[in-house]
Image (cartoon, rainbow over all chains, first blue to last red; front, side, top):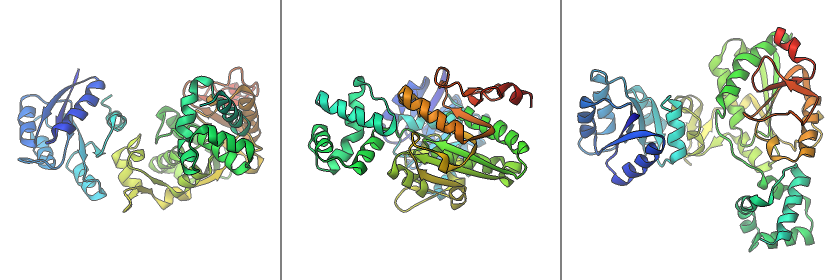
Length: 121
Length: 278
């Protein structure tokens, strides 16, 4: 089973995303900020990361930059998931190595479509 | 909803657009006509049907019939068909033409995602496809949907169904309203027209490719036959009709047969073998 790490400081968003991603037959792990997520990745690289932007301790962009510098850090497919919905922010995330970008709010259909887009399904 | 209401609305749909609504799908009527009924101040669909009966109004009838049709569409729906079109059908047709012009018809193109997806792929593939003059016509029965398609502005959820983030960045601009506006260049390559597929289509001209995906399956047999006949008369010699996945014309028409060269494609009967050998 593929593994997806869901990184978001909102417990509600994690819960909603987690249910959707589980329905897509993923094993789900949750982290509440970038630092926690990075710790997890140093131990086990997930197949996919669903990543919020604005979080305390370490934000999504800093996490992404750090992740891509880790050995095997290019492996996970990173899908950004943020309310920062303008082209500048999206472009920045893509330049930093995000494979896809979901604009919040999202639903199951969007997550499925985006995961299919990057070959996770 | 009264049985009488269901019967009248189902009859109207069949007459206006050939759509067949089984009694088991009464909920579809409620869902799709809810907005119109509210706008017009009807307390229920029974009231709406009563008004249509007492004061017949062709414009309102057409609007009700259009609202009853499925508007479900997404960017790059059924990619294999799109890829077959872009990588096989169009290049082959282009070689056969002398003037470098091709015409594609998206029949039942709803809010335009199908046509815009084709235009994006042509732009991405580039080369001889991009330098060719490829006209895309997208038609839909529904006036408001056609106007929306022509405008090329899509909502938050629409641009996240089937569209990669790279394509969103390449071809769209975010508006202050939060909608995403597709580029003028892509808009310029497509014409949008309101058109009922059961009506005479000769005014649309002839086409190299006709895409008619997930439109026929909602129609009754008589309407399906007549729509196909009309399409056959608009198909250029050697042209291809492409249907949705799992859709077939077997038992519907003898005028077309499955293409041997293109999966999901249908060609004029008696030409499939020649086409495959070409």
